[in-house]
Length: 108
Image (cartoon, rainbow, N blue to C red; front, side, top):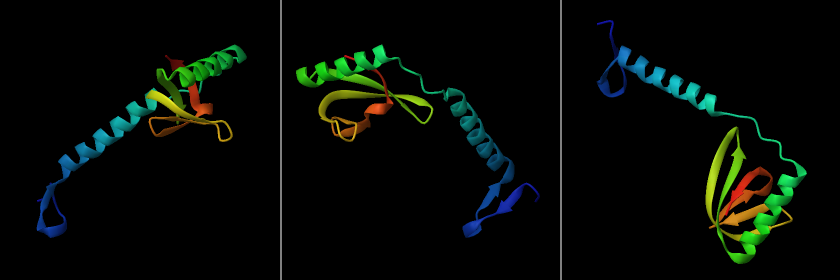
């Protein structure tokens, strides 16, 4: 009876199976950690190009894909820029707020 453990509602759970579940969570966390990277450093020319693309996309209502850096990961946000909040450094794309300082690349 060593391989069994009593849990709530008198249900029995097999201990080795539980260990496999915890192991898979550990492996997933390790693999997610491999994808983490440092924020790329952009030059002044790259910032000017981003600014130009933002203005052009906003004025002409082009659909864009923003590549943003957040917590060690690169994420994509797609849509049309509906509002640019210069004071708070925010862009609104289809109702989603994106911090302008996190933008790495803009694909028009």
